[in-house]
Image (cartoon, rainbow, N blue to C red; front, side, top):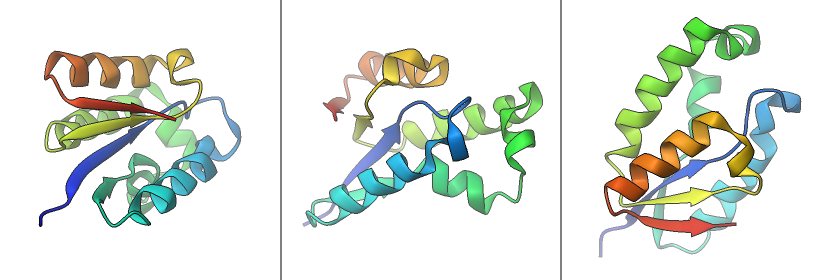
Length: 107
């Protein structure tokens, strides 16, 4: 049985520690089911070597959104964290997932 690839999306910019705890809790919860392979953009951001200030800059946003949208297109589903509607980036990710007829889960 192959695992379902799930991308986690939600608000980051303007939230303490870029909301990493919400992303990491969602990853742990979803991984614990044994059904999903998770793409956690908050974890990838940490591994990128960019500072939080760089991540929140316009140039940083271009870099991470390009990467994140490419990664999203490799997934089967998207998991929307609470308050995703307040995030411009998460709304773009949701729109792309919807356009691609991906399964959309909501927290």
